[in-house]
Image 1 (cartoon, rainbow, N blue to C red):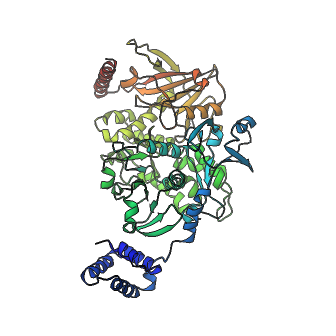
Image 2 (cartoon, helix red, strand yellow):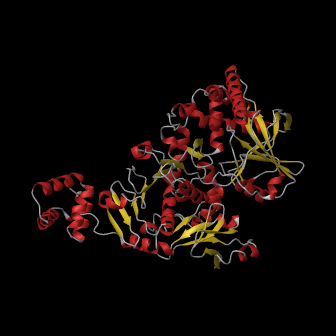
Image 3 (tube, rainbow, N blue to C red):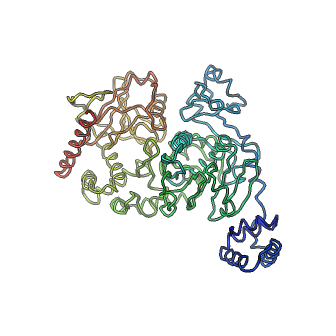
Length: 627
């Protein structure tokens, strides 16, 4: 027999059907009783209609649930195809940059609008009806892209919660490109769907809202089932109709692979429709559906500071709190120094005193040793530290792996100082002694980063190797580099940098570097600290810092690495935002010279044995690959 919702749909009960379905969704035991009664006694359609009406009359009015889909939701769906992708026109934008694009964009009131049929990828390339135009949006326009609904229309009909604008992060575009690439055939990792997870508070739901627009335009015949509630779903049909009910009501749509099932912050159950699951890293939401073949997990990166600043400027800068205090830029910088670049903490909750006052208490609770000891087999620390506040998920290139890191560099440094003062042990020993516990590797990698910053700012003599592309030579040339001691300068924006200091961002603000200094010969020295031999360089990040810091005679990029990988550390590829090797490099990259710089960790016999084994393994791998 069909399920109870299909029976109700077949009885032509009109508005009464919706009342029944909503009530049964919220009262599953009543659903079982009603279905049992239908099986045992009622045979004809008229008998069933009579039973349903009698049953409905027994339900108190206050429990009959919502009577219809909110008109604001239906209006959102009908108007979604009229949404516009726009970008703020910078005052310093060159006229010829815009003139080259006029076939595909319009300019109006200091905004650039993409014309109908025009889309853009994560590298800025414009497409018209799916065909490349071989033109690119300037980076300054890519940085302010947003999706805007028509006037008085709001995402999912919710003005207060979602508003009418979605800031289009470049990682949204790169993630969608990756998903499309990995879902072509049954053997592809994302053929049936994927979970998109990451640090709470970074806006995974807003990626889902952008996907509504993407699916509506790319797959106009597809139905979208949206579930952000334990039981209630919305069905968005191609012809513009919206229905509400339990997922069982939408059985047919969910069993069609050409449709899409979007689940936000709920447990996902397996369906044939393409599954897109948006959730924070809570294991209870990862059930059997995510373990099936053709279903994978991707990690959304935290925001960078420029994205936070852009969103503040576009959507928050004119806001005031209840006392009339304006949300000025200095407040944004202060909150960034506490929480790191998390829009919920820095922007959405900027005037929530209760939320903001949690910070001191959370930091006071964090004990470095206990935090490391609490890490489970998946590498996730237990307790409140992970709840978007103290610990963030740091996505690696390609969206397929991540590590955990403290929210800001200042916080990590503070916790390390407390550890060394309390235990009278160097953090180096703490890092080295944990080599046999792989589940803590990501945190120890972050601690290695802070340890390296301390060494580099203190200065001294360091071993370095110049890295060259396609260098198969067995001769390793090692030289010495003398680094002068410099005081730390933690900065929030590049306006805060100081020329004679060791400059470190308060949070991970640039995807290509961890710190930098100016040298006397008009050279810019960049440091990237890593424990991985595969650490591609994002050209976008280099471009941003190059544009901000001005031209230099030379740029030296040092990969600060532990001793065990120093001798065999390879030249690193220049990559796109999505982690792919760039085919055509900007000319200014010719001024960059790559080096490996050794951070000496040889503090124990245990470490030396470990380093020797890694070095031997690396050499064997290199020899095997050359055969």
